[in-house]
Structure formats: C-alpha cells, structure tokens
Image (cartoon, rainbow, N blue to C red):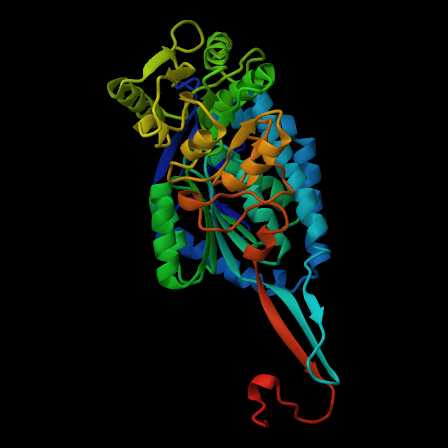
Length: 497
C-alpha cells in the first residue's frame, strides 16, 4: 500500500490534515491488523477542498458532457482491471466476504459506464410557444460543488452512485468517506484521478463528524448527498434546509419480507439467507423482518434456522467464508443491546444471540446469525434498525394483515413479497409503503440503472441511481428565443381583454 493514500487529496495533491491529527483504521476480522493512520480533517482542510472544487468547476462544468463521459468510461476500465485487488483491500477494511466486495466493485463499474452513456443524454425539452416566431426549451446545467458523504458498508459502490452522476453532469466533488472505510475511499479516488480527472474536480477529505459537519455547513457547497444513520441524516437535512442548499438523504431501513402460504419455500430460504445475513445484516436494505403466514411458519423457520447455523463465519478474504464480522465494537455493542431488548420483550431467541467462538474468530468483532420468533409487530426489535445479522419473525394469518405489519414502521426503503398469485403481487407493489419492492426475491439487489431510495423516515424523496439521480445533480434552466423582431407579451403579461 502506498503511504500517500493515508492522506487527503486536495487540488491534485496528497496532503496531511492541517492539524496533523489522525485516526487508526483496523481490520474488523483481525483487530491486530492495522491498515493505517488517516487524516482527522477539520474546517481548514474542508475549506481548502471546497475552494479547489469551486475553482475547478469553472472549466469542468464548461467541458462538453461527452468528454466528461470519456473520463468516466476510463474509470470503469481501470476498476475492471483492478477489481480483485480493490475487493481484497475492501474486505480487509470493512469485513464482508471477498465475493461480496467484488460485487461492490462491479456495481461501481456498471455505474461508471452508465453515467458515461448518460453524458450524451442529459435531456432538456423543446415545446411549442404560445406565440408565433418564438422558440421555447429547457436545458440542464450543473449545480456547482457537491459534498458527498458515504457509509462504510458499500465503500466503493455507494460513493460512485453519487460521484459519477455528479461529475457526468458537470459538478465538482468533495468526498468524505466513512471513517470506517478510509482506505477504500482513497483507493477509489486514486483510480478516478489516474483516469484523467483534472486537479480540483475531485477532492478527498478523511475524518469523522467534524469533517462531515464542516462539509455540510460550508457556504460554497451547493448540494450534499448523504448515506448513513437516520439521526445524522436528520442533522444534515436541518443544516442544508437552513442554508437553502439541495440535499439527498439515504438513511435507515427495517425491511420486511412477506411470505404467503403459496410461496416457494426453497426460494424463500435462499432469499432469506442472503437478505438477512449477507453483509452480516449490515445493509440499509437488509431483510430484518420476516412476516410469514401461519400455515408455513414452522416449516420455514425450522429450515431457515438449520441453514443459518451452518453459515461459515470468518475473515472474508478466506475462500470458504460466507459471513464476515460486524464493522467494529460499537456496532457489536448495539447488536448485543438489541438482542437483550428482544429477550426482555418476550421474543424467543431461536438461534444465535451471541458471539461465535473458535479458530478464526477470536481476533475480530463477529456475531452469530440470530433469529427471533414470537415477535409482535410493536416490539422494538420489529421496529428499530439493528444493523446486524438479526432477523425478527412475525406470524400473520392473511395478506391484509401482512401489509399492515409491513407498513407499521417509520422507515420505507425496501420490501419483498413471495407469492405465486400474480394479482396479490401487483397489489403489494402498490400497497407496501417502500421505495423498492421485490417480488419473489429478497430485499437486497439494487441495479445500477434503476432509481434507489425510500419513503417516510428513510429519505427525503430524492433517488440515487438510474435516470432520476441526474435530476438531483442538475438545475433546469428555461430558455425563450424570440425571433419575431417585436415585443410579444406572454399571456401572463397580456393586459388586453
């Protein structure tokens, strides 16, 4: 690993934090493995980065959009070449198995090529004028400097969902990765710069809450895209609202999977193992509530428990690992707290509920796959985000009851329903309160060219991914061209009867 990557990247140069302060980055599967010390950035560092981005915007925003797309395409090529190398380092840093981090990089590759293509499709509209010899159109213009604050669980995919469309649209970026995945963020920036981004177009500031707060509250940052906790996201929204700047929030989830009596249970089991325990349950889209019909409840739960107990837990860069560690001690403490809450509330801890023991897990923050049964919809473990490998099972007797339970939470990110009845599936698409609904698939599996986001307490209405993200990263400008050679008053200004 190049030592330079342990620094910020501002205006084309790698540099330490102005204060000289730093923080330690540790492998969650092997706590004795220290990945490095990274800058603990503050207001001065953020100010330098924003100033560089503001200066670079003048030329980057004026570059023909397809030329920006050529650079994004080269980024995709470099990510393709270095996919395994990057995935290995991501697993070392944040824990999920190598096969998962390779998928994380692939999502970034797909997003790079998609965003590159969209630089030839930044559509405006042309419409008829209400007057003769007059031409009406709208065009898309970049916003300016965009602050990007991302989470650790998808340390390459999620920031590229944000940065690639922002850059394609002509904006410049100041990127603050999670303090739990600083190395992955630096490796990504290195690749993007190597592809040809001019100095100042992309700037990296490492650090925790102080750096994030300085970025959100900087007066020269025009838009903020944030992925993280609901508590922090609410603070971001308050600050941006007060300063009249655009903001996109992707926050918590408590995602339901509805399983009806006619479901294919083998398919359900595969979906649950992946949705509930993939990424050790540390996804905003993780399947955290199983809402299952009473006719198939016992068979499904018993089979699921046996399969979940057999999952191989360990360091994600080992070939046979199926589930990695929790990100850090704080995350582990939260999981243990909620397991205690579930037991106190009267739920039954069917499997798990503790840290594993044995070879390969003694030096990391691991936790066993955990399943609670006898859960009622108003228990805290059925309503609050745990962010770990904990599944709450709620028994229901009808489709109507299932939807009522699914909607009885403050979040609304992802959802799933398993049924062979096409009419019921289509009803669920409309009746479940979520930004995403999967039919006969788990609550995870977003695709790069589709909008991603949630409703209620999950977000503020904007979408990442797909065509809709470009609406966030651009301003619409309306243009009128009057070639009549005389003053023509629009209807709103026409005082004649």
